Image 1: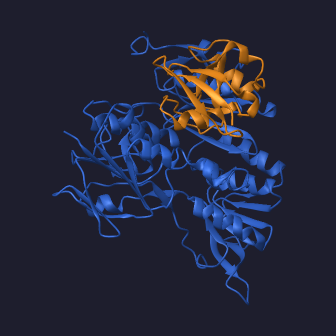
Image 2: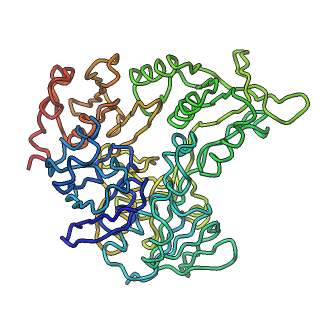
Image 3: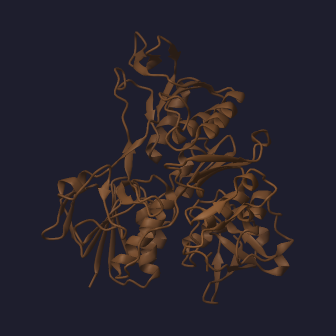
Length: 104
Length: 417
């Protein structure tokens, strides 16, 4: 079970023990960080936007085109933007650090 | 002061109201009363991944028991509420216990409209609304591989696509002239009809089902018969002919209901202590001015949020632009806005590419859009639709021109900022 570090919108860091095989979004939604994830993970609503720490950007599986296209339209998007519903957690992601993006 | 909140119904709207209440610091009690035995769960995967056996039941849950425990939310599941006493402000549930409320949310959802022709009580006829329904349908798949779907709307077509992918012979019988007739234009209907046909789904429009026949020696379904004399052999039948609001409790309590529980912009009924949200609520849509009942996750989510804020004393209105989605054979159809009363349609992109959009205009304004595998348009449209955006039809029809560059907001619009 990977340990995920989550920086919430108030700038507070939390450590979360997450289940491998789950989407990162599922883990974040369960907690109180304001990830709405309205579409439930079908890469459509972009309400599970996070910034992945720089070191991790290239270690994660690259986004598919639909994720890239959605992110491109988000006001706060950066090169570290990902939709957490598209990140499937693995044991190799131990110590992954993400920041919850501001609400669109 | 509101200190005791009761939520009747345990779906998406309930979960969202609960979440917003706690997020905003509400410290009083929350009780969620649900007739289904499960914690609030996501219904959209039911006709897709869950039916296909690609998702575990546990992952349908929006949040798990631990979350509710940590947030001091009492859940009374598997117990339908049976009465609201508005005078004493109490809700009674089926085991006789009652809950007092300072504010009550009715988030009772909707139920499938029943087909009323001879033979609908036979074995092998299924509806798709709950986890239980889908598990029953999955279990019944051992009876054979011929599926007849009655109703060519979202649910029917999603079930058709999923089952076709599982190797079923699938026939869809739609009573109107085209698929998804209630929600999309002719062009979108036609595209989906072609895509289904191409993958071997038999689509019959203008098909009036008159009865369902059984085998001579058993009460199992054998075929579906239509008014034109055709007979479609079936091992399984799925009926998806729409849903109706579950408003019985509200009606019995004397609250106004008309195709759903009537609420104002704050999601409040005429009783100031009672709110309604989600599939069961009828509200005037801010963009069109039309009273509607919307059946979508997004609507349940937004209304659920509105209810929580109003319960806590913020007089916020629900006015977000609705959006809806469907997924059939991996073709993602996302509609933003309501196309009611549109007077012009502009197609962006080529259907053959499998990625395009259909724009609905009313008096020159972009009022809705169907995007098919087109996340870019979909995301941009959510910032344009219903906001007095006036596109140029020529630019709009050119997919190389970004949607937001196709026009401008009307000067009088509030979104010029």
